[in-house]
Image (cartoon, rainbow, N blue to C red; front, side, top):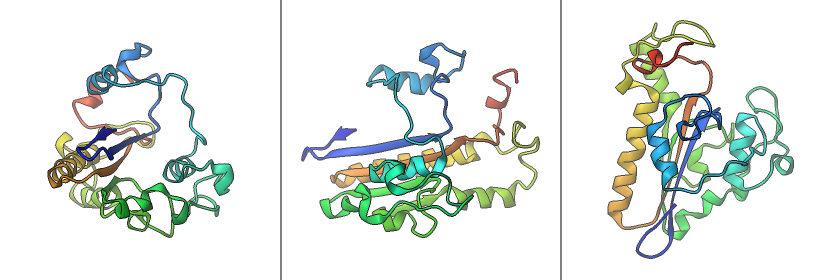
Length: 208
């Protein structure tokens, strides 16, 4: 979180789906190399005893966007697996931001509501990873062999969903900052959620 000239905080929320706490290089738990996250951690508060309110994709995101526990929402599972209540727009803190003068952008995986999109939750600019993944599927139909638990993707690194979303988030961050208004960006990355199908050179960094 950063504060602009008018003291209203800029809010950048980065979410990596299924990222294990012990897979951070600076913790030296598993020999994983994460130099960028290590650098960020060196300038940040690091919480070593933080817990998800629900270890399931959609309820965890719904808790983030509303500030309410999944128990309160009634969301105990992913709504695209079983019918379950989902986050309501009236409860979301993000819906209040545009009225407060914020520029808002949502980039990545949307898994908060099957009925309402990010636009309904206060996000003015929306880039869905699902749309980009569909484009990649057409361009590289055989890019990710190997099944759910492993395979080397033949998509060039710079064209992967992760790199594309990071570039889009960075471009919007730069643009929002130039406007001189406070901003909020939620960048929701699909990975390292299964299937594990990285592109080179990351696919060769570790012995499976």
